[in-house]
Length: 188
Image (tube, rainbow, N blue to C red; front, side):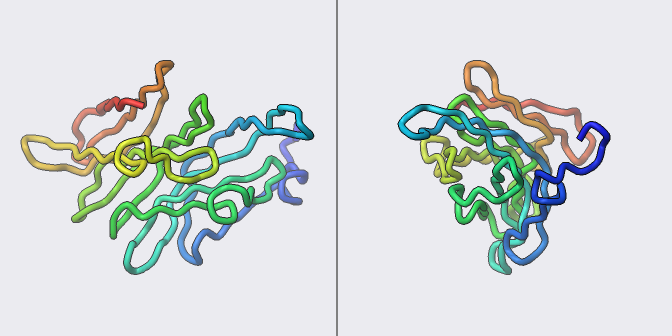
């Protein structure tokens, strides 16, 4: 609202909390998704709110990357993923979405980390507009990039993502060890 009060048309009180899997959940990024729909035989446009982050998976998978999609009134969009939620284990340790963008086709491009053997590497994932994995991207909708310094793998956590006009994906990161920031570009 203009006066800074909560917008009560959003979830009744202006606040939404969503439990993804009965444990620790964290939201890190969000984006509006424009979708083209059919209403009474006529084309129309609607918008959804996609949130990315992390959710506790299980003792077998650790923390998983997670997406949740809301309608503009704050209710879960149950047509997305499983009842409005997507949880994806990339490793048995810690996987997380740090940033996401929506491309011109409504696909969700997410960057984050995949921890394996206690080292973090880039994880870029792409999902179709309904939350299913886009198998046309990378291997099963994901690409991992390990970062090396002087021949040794180091932790690297993406901090931002951009989509170039030609569809290429650009991810920015810095090393934990204090090395300079870096950019990595991927084909769409």
